[in-house]
Image (cartoon, rainbow, N blue to C red):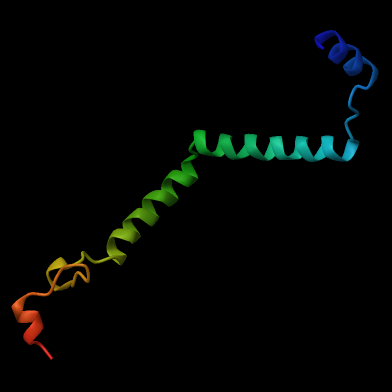
Length: 83
């Protein structure tokens, strides 16, 4: 079976379509560029991250969990009396 597989592979080697080869090459380049961006922080990106992180801190307020109601918690006597 192994010998037969080798013979068939030699006789009928799969052909790679030019369109598919270009598509795979383009996809590979996109992935490499994406990985490169993740690995190497640039000065501009670093500065923009600092600005956006400081803006995020100003934008969001801390949550007051005392006023939140847990719908999964069984009701207490006080809650049952409320209309």
